[in-house]
Image (cartoon, rainbow, N blue to C red; front, side, top):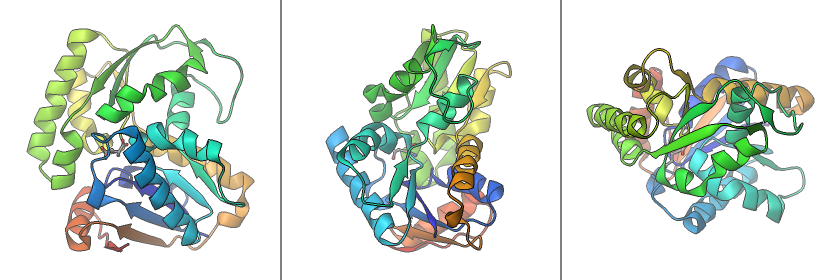
Length: 269
Ligand code: DGL
């Protein structure tokens, strides 16, 4: 049984890559809704509709578990989908919680009351839709008290990455970090709250300075998925993977191959 990994485009590959390394025997089916990327400039209703459709598609293709490897979809659609109820035997999970559990020094799934944590000043870099949802702050408030979060909506970065224009993406990242530092001069930690941003992790780290701890979701989500699969062992497979896109498969395959530095071949969804 394959685990479905969903993103608006290429960003979720940063999660898939980490998950494949951590769980080499698990089968994965990746779906990039490239025809509708970026999601981060859409309204919540629209993001919900697109996410719901893609997740249904992955469920219908046999994925019992789908990971929204997209913060924007997690922010706009996850809670609503879970509240509306999912089909028998199917599950959908997001990418916020593992990150916040790591930031707040918790074990996976530790739901004890919020408490004081070491990190007090946190910079959040995310898409405009994720920032305006305040979903990150809400999830954090369930687990920690006294943490000051300054959010920077990083307009344009996802488009530049999807287009393969990394020079533009770097320039935009530097200017978004400058803007954040004007609001919070000395963050202790920075959250890359969009799965596309780890592709620019070095630029973020350089612009922030080496004393800022940068959190990316790939390894954290992979670790929490490993914990989940240990409790649901029927999902072990042969380590196979498939890649689907609603966009142009040849173009998306080229970009994905460039980013992951291994051949990735997308097919039309
Ligand atoms: N990778 C998505 C995220 O984590 C990008 C969203 C977009 O398409 O704007 O938020």
